[in-house]
Amino acid sequence: MSATDTGGRVRKFGSAVADGWTRERFGLLGALGLVLLAFGPSFQIYLFTDFLVVALFALGFNLLYGYTGLLSFGHGLFYAGGAYGLAIVLRDLGPVFADVVGSGVAPLVTFVVGGLVGLALVVAVAVPVGWLSVRLEEIYFALITLAFGMIGYSLIIQDPAGLTNGTDGIIVLLGSVDVGGESFRIGARQTYYALTVVVVLAAIYGVWRVVNSPFGTVCKAIRESPDRAAALGIDVRHHRWMTFIISAAIVGIAGVLRAGLASVASPGLTHWSTSAVAVIATVIGGATYFSGPIVGAFIFLYIRWGISRFPTLDAYWELFFGALLIGVVLYFKAGAVGGLLLLRDRLFGEGRAGGDDGPTQGGGGAAEPGSSGDRADDRGDDS
Image 1: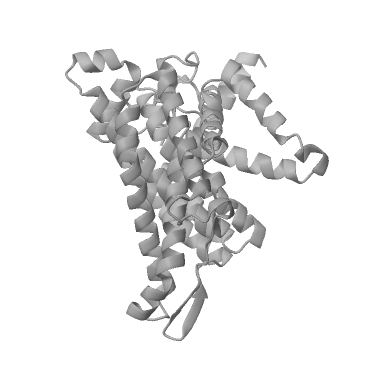
Image 2: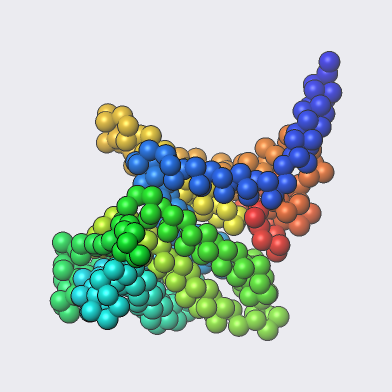
């Protein structure tokens, strides 16, 4: 049997399998997995919750980077903003809410209000920071966002207003809710996991709607060629500014969830190395695909966890990820999602390229990395 015949049979088999697995079935399978994971080992629940938070962080970052082409090294500022907004409300207003709504539901009300305050704080900071930052391009944009992030880091440590508790950070105590004689602790692994799943899925859906809206289409046009977009009458700076604010808000939501998961809001959340986590996850997964940051966050967190299982290797985990990033940047710019789509096209046949999961409308997975073939289509990328 020739290699051509074998390849044809593999593609036919792959197509038959793919035809039997619709997007709805994959969605149901994923939902079932999320439910079953809630009954898994405690540490695995924690690790997957951590993944969901990092995935949302990276997705918010990539809304700016992947859809307008602006690379930010200061998104840790908004990550910390959400965390500190929640922490300050829990610390200072918890007793007030207990007196107003009763001690039974006060922890839940305080958490919700704290999350909203954290989100409002992030947006309030993102408006002026974004307005100043989007006036710059490329490396200068990256540098000014890095500068804003480090200013925030310094202010949190110095604590001139007496709110952040300096280098020690703020302990986050979520408390227990007592309703109708039933009591549950918000910070319990299973409870917080369920809460995180709901919030993250809602946020992902919101980002997906933005990406697939006329606004998102304009952002993609700006990413491809700001000059052409401006020539068509598009206000490039305004759209970048709005995208910056939305991106910061999504990252702020992730910061709120991070504070509850880690039980602390610390200055390290503002540091540039925290911002780099979103960059690394996005590059590994594929910045030009909607699901790229999510896949990249999964790879980053679980490889990091795997390395930590070996004490000898754990001391060199940065070296490993550095080598991985070099390989991705030099040889596979489309990232993990691009590689999976290319493999799908090889197995299922060229006729399936350019569909809902394809990188471009009518484009194949074999496009050169960095070319327009790596770009996600207007129908929602690979989602």
